Image (cartoon, rainbow, N blue to C red; front, top):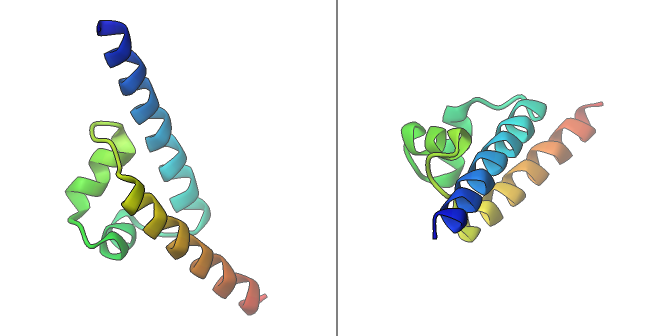
Length: 77
């Protein structure tokens, strides 16, 4: 059982690192992302730090948000 918990915590930490990297690549603040998700900044920070697991629904919202932001950036160039 402990092994499963360790794997879950490792997954959450890795997901948090990926979220942070993508957010920074898109020049967004934690507040920006939290607003897009409809959650408080503190909850988003928990995702980035790996303290909470992000739901598939929230990941889908992020995917759409980052795609929209990327498209805007491409148009500006």
